[in-house]
Length: 292
Image 1 (cartoon, rainbow, N blue to C red):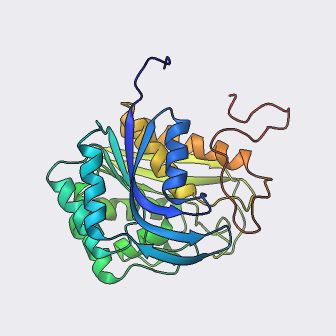
Image 2 (image 1 turned 90 degrees about the vertical axis):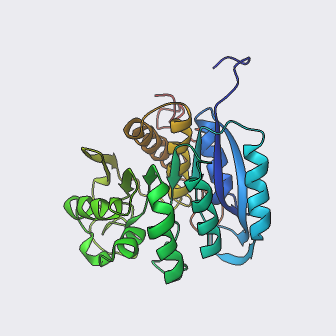
């Protein structure tokens, strides 16, 4: 893209992370790394760092609606990604606007479970996802915990690619065109699911006539905060650039893998640190990990 070119635009509807490792801050970085101009609708303001979330302030529903009006009144948005919606009323608001055609290339990251597996969305919220928002989505990107609660499948059963394919098909039954089930919480990968760490971490993409297994080598690092946000946001960015879903997902997965690799040995905070979206980290030969 030359300096005179106008960039493609994507939108993230998500919460603010004061530590900037996840949430809309991570989304904006992922979009920028793809060469896409990111816009935002803030659903909640959180106080958090690499260790914990210490406070959450929900944004009033009318302000969320006004932010959406402001964006669509002025920008040609090529793709939209949802992250933390948090309340049934917000999920229903986004679903209503999706149903009336406000969103192009809607990517739903159904944020419903903490990394520990703790559920922070009640059954009404889950039903709103299943019945109202997922049917409007081009792509849904649950992790294994979210796939479990959305489908009613015990997470203990989600321990293999075959099981991930089946749960992706079940979630697709709610109406989305594509489903990407992420393998970052497989046994041996997730600290809460003991086991032997695999050589590769596998995600599963299921869509119209397509079942694709996406592998990437496992990276041993504590700096993995915001991987789900970044993957969905990068996918939305590549959709805004005109790529189809399989290509957008592959490029987003490559981006996240390299961002994990770049931040592998960082010491930003004492908990689960952020990714390296811009290739600041160096490979073993001193070159940027993004040079390839």
